[in-house]
Image (tube, rainbow, N blue to C red):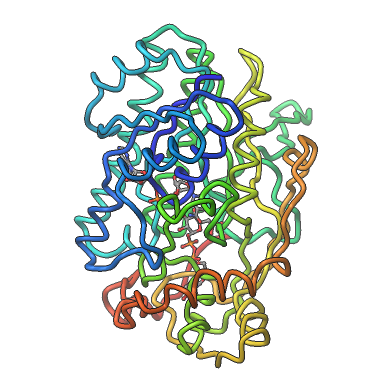
Length: 399
Ligand code: NAD
Ligand code: USQ
């Protein structure tokens, strides 16, 4: 298949591109390198020494003999170039990773809020408008987030995208319907993902665009089979207070003897998936697209759920690192339960890597090996969800 990977230089996009290339798909990457520029803005670098795009692609060619092309363009701004590329390449599928993905970064200032909304919604709408304009039957596979649902489940399992409801009509009848699960974003970043869902629903209804939206949990781990083959192919590892996600941060903190930074009580429960499973899920989604005319297919791309405090305990037990409960900079529920339906990807053949496997290897092979590159000053999460302390007192709203 011909696959266009938008955001193919990123943490999920790079290993996905290599995985798909190795599986025989023809891959073209689009990326504007905004993520690397944000590292410059934040004065931080990936813990792992990532190579430039041209070095990465030359190394892949050298190691496997396979070509991956890279086109540098801004999906949110360069609409005409994107349209021309779709017309020229005629992809069977477009995998859309090209968004600003950090919740803390999206909350840093009003500028960061505007950037995140303009970038993410601009990119998604440009892609969908361009797909329709080409007249081609392109399957759009988007990386969404578990966070669109909020994390409170009122005692029920979160279904895969749609909620079955019953409505009483005026003449006393009961009608059954399926609606998009009510959106409950917890940050400006998560808000953009809930709005992406409406763009997908509309273009799917009006233009019959085939769309798969993968509601992914927090990704942990660094390497996949292909990125581990050569140092020049290594994947990025974010550990800083804005882009580092919780489990990878704990693994790095343990490696350098830093206390594990649990926000508040650590009672927050979240969904997780290993990066190797991410790339497998994306391939599964690509090779079994929805039918034309089928509604947007939503799959929950996660394999297990954990409380943050339990993760800290697990990593501490493996490494001896102390646990520190720090003030939570976010406006989120201190405690929540989370049950998630994920039968669709399992049904397509996903065999999950669980947390127990590989956790310690991740600490030694990646976090310890590159710990000399860590800037300890970048570890604390300094992006605040609310400015005034009196507002923070009010506590989070939500389900
Ligand atoms: P990332 O920031 O590492 O990668 C995103 C890539 O997209 C970067 O290389 C960036 O330069 C590029 N990009 C951003 N805006 C662009 C634009 N306008 N034009 C062209 N390129 C652009 O993020 P990631 O961790 O790889 O996440 C990829 C996707 O998966 C995101 O949409 C994110 O919301 C989703 N996701 C990630 C996680 C996670 O834990 N990392 C979990 C769930 C969902
Ligand atoms: N947390 C800590 N200590 C830390 C860092 C985080 O306790 O040092 C807590 C946070 O307060 C939060 C939880 O861990 O309760 C998760 O935070 P995170 O930064 O790991 O994840 P999040 O901000 O939700 O975002 C990440 C990705 C995002 C993706 C999302 C999936 O950056 O792109 O959409 O995970 S999900 O969480 O399922 O919505």
